[in-house]
Length: 228
Image (tube, rainbow, N blue to C red; front, side, top):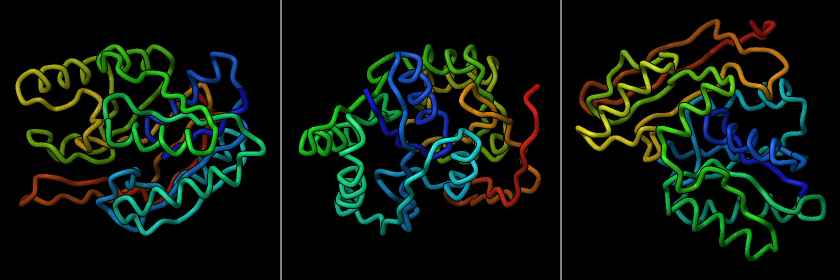
């Protein structure tokens, strides 16, 4: 099928796109919604400004729109974007794995538009999916956390096998989703098979709120370099 991929620059959306491409689908467009609401129920927020460079690095056209991020109202914005692409696509990819809120709403939009809703790892074991990302050559940086005992030391951390082990242990003890599906963690993909070059973070600011025990890494400058 001809597909558009909803992307944020995070691991889930890009891995979904990667898996769909490997299944033989053709990715025609990248789609990104930039929400003005930091508490958006639907859209990834941290470092969403980097999707332009990511699209250029992948080499596909990006359809980018702003949204106020008002709960439920923001669904109209994504539906309008997908409706405009309908003559050129048969479906979309998303990185949902366990969020019924996001999955059911995207499915409903696709049903109304006559598009396929493809979530390649929906309902799968999050530990297996995350380890699969590492095996498939994804280098992933943590750029936001919002679930104690995840702390500021996680900001800027590169996810590796040891990190996955820690997330699994935190899931068992505290119920934190291994892939951060509930907003516990947001990420940025620095290297993956979809990229022509690796993304290098040149300048970033760490923001941490001790009261809420949450924070994010604001990436101000990036560059591109050859893959290792």
